[in-house]
Structures are given as structure tokens and as C-alpha cells.
Image 1 (tube, one colour):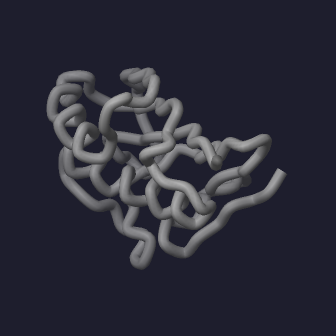
Image 2 (cartoon, helix red, strand yellow):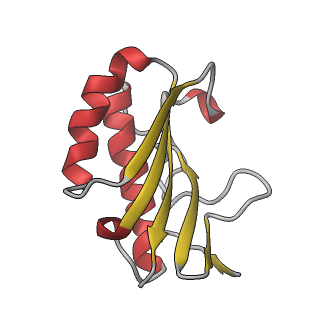
Image 3 (cartoon, one colour):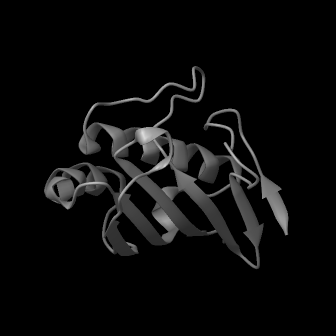
Length: 125
């Protein structure tokens, strides 16, 4: 296993790695909409927040030598599934056909009170 870490994405806020590379895949921990420079939450709604979360995810992927184009699977966590459509609009700007497999869940709460979190599995080859 190889730990992947970059200052271009927020530092882990607990005992976990930003990402781990193993057996040709990058396993990226859930990214919330934090500005990596300030640590502040970016965006007031889930659409704005997923944009920052995906920018953070992309920065980690690039540090590992891959890109979001090679994403195999994502998991999206929302505090309000009523924002699902707006999130999909932004999400589709970061991914294209064939879209990664995905799960999306509504949860009661997320770290720091954010509205969205995204994790991913990305191919390294």
C-alpha cells in the first residue's frame, strides 16, 4: 500500500489517509467541500459544495498520477436528497461516458456540517 497525500486537497481531519494506492487502484477517502488553503467550507448548497469536493478529489487523483477520467466507482453522501438533481448537474461536468458506477445516499449529518461528501475508486493504469 502507498499513501497518497497532497496539499492541493484538504488534510485528513481524522486518523485516515487522503488516499491509498493498491493493486492498480486509488482508493480516495470521502472529500468534503473544504478549501485546501484555508480549511473553510466552500459553497452554501450541495451543488456548490460537490463542485469543491470533486476539485479536491481531482487534485488527489492527479497527485497519484491518474485523473477523474479513470474513475471506476463513486459514493455520494447528501444530507438532503432533494438536492440530487442539482448535484447531478455539477457531477456531470466532472465525469463523462462511460460514467463511473455510483451509489448515492441521504445521511443525517456529515463532518463540519457540510451538505455533501464524495469518495471514489480510481484506476491507476
